[in-house]
Length: 301
Figure 1: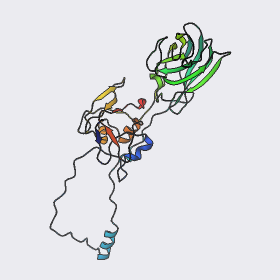
Figure 2 (figure 1 turned 90 degrees about the vertical axis):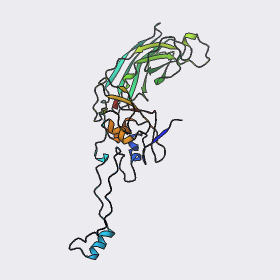
Figure 3 (figure 1 turned 180 degrees about the vertical axis):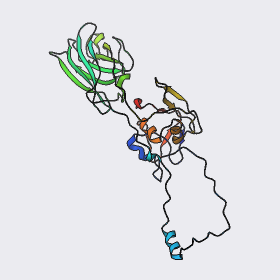
Figure 4 (figure 1 turned 135 degrees about the vertical axis):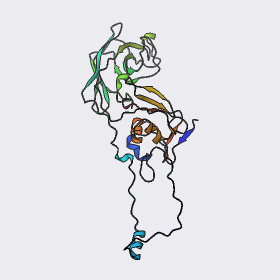
């Protein structure tokens, strides 16, 4: 089991933005970079002078109702992290699919829903094969004749054999806020397990492979991590960078503290949590596990 790195009363784990309140301490403030403790002045033997003009009753009232000190600035004043969505209806990719032997034909396109989710649309689907056919998007290319061991993103059975063109709209759950890493559309057999069919169209066999060419508009964000270099309580390595050279991922080192990791990259703790919505939180304490990879790319959320 990996060693847990605890962040004082509040330690990292990353949660969804909606769970940011769990990062707060007893004073409702987000964790801050660690700082040396303030120097305490030595006690004085001299009595504290009584302010001129204040009566005993005034002093008693002040003692019973002390003033609340002005709180130090916290991350509450920092703007919430944002990433502009792609306008709904924007077509991000489209193309035509035809199996090598001409048994399957259809058109596909991927459309933005306007809320950082996407839908794959399939139309004009025809198939003369004696088994149902299915589709899914993959990061890595496949080859016709391969057997799938993983369903991919947006796996959906289109149907078949068809007596006429059919259509389907499929939510791309799990594609992230930028689906362009899904470079391959795979059409495969959805035959029932053990169905008596030729091996080349048995369950899970790849029937067609189509390269997906994306056209994703630029997104705007106010979160721009920059690596200022290792520092105390933030000594892990940057393990990937974006095409522009910005830090893309970071691996947690022993004794890392969330405030110091965020400060190393010039972002707030809230930003760091927003970038890593999928990390679990246990109870009131949050834990950052040594060896955990943190995302630093807004498009990689």
